[in-house]
Length: 203
Image (cartoon, rainbow, N blue to C red; front, top):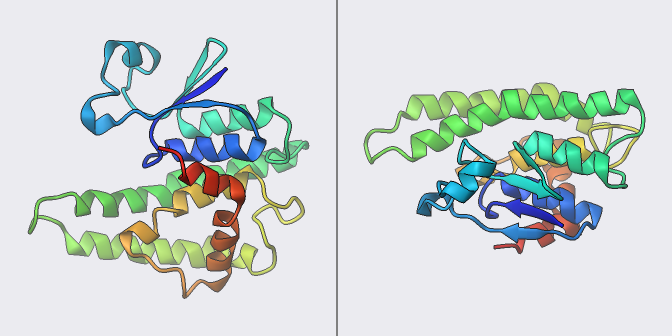
């Protein structure tokens, strides 16, 4: 039995997307961190950081979305993880970029939006937004202008899923990708996948 702890409005949706792509049966436990549901003694015994998501698979417990997604893709058969070492390294490269470069800028915008009225720093939001557009132009657009997916000979893989999962927050903060035509079309292809739609229907 596989359990994924976390609700859809969190990074847990990344792991649910993988599970849906793989067609693996799982149980979602939709914990709400804002209601203290990740601070119970039972949950902290699994994830001392008190964050979501957490994966439980036959007594094996794992946290952090990147680790969970790699574990799932490498444990269960499917096309998400390339068979060769170079393809797997490319998946890691794209995932690392999304987590270390793209996501911190999105988080900076999110944090400013959570500040009390009149206390947010508009210049910080503007700087992060400019950086996001610049990164997309430098990193994503050149690849996606010549290929439907990030690993040019592999089709849709965990690289696309992980990067698209991070980029899914852009629209929430009003960042349009219309000026990045190739990236915009790629995201639409990713989010049109039935597995993403099923993950979005979860609690």
